[in-house]
Image 1: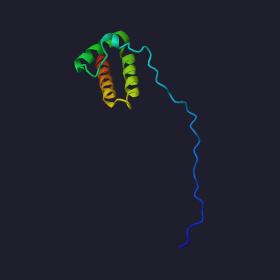
Image 2: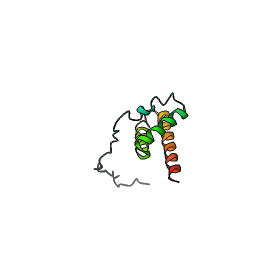
Image 3: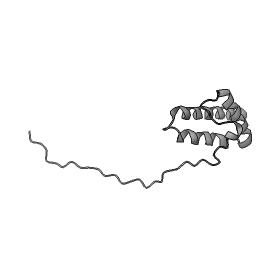
Image 4: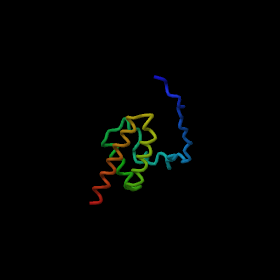
Length: 101
């Protein structure tokens, strides 16, 4: 059987014109004022205690956004740390849901 003589076509894609969104963390260390620092070595209870204080000062939305931003930024560099930020974010969301009831 003879091989087909059709040319293989290569589909070239145009580069995306969408701008990459960059997460900027405002007021770095603002949760550290309430004791939320060195979370690798802190117990769950100690982290939750400091997050409750931060919620009283900043509100749940700001705390959730800050935890989410840090979790996303550390996702590829330190999975364990990112997981803790996500777990703490879920804790804050659970508090917010229970407060609405």
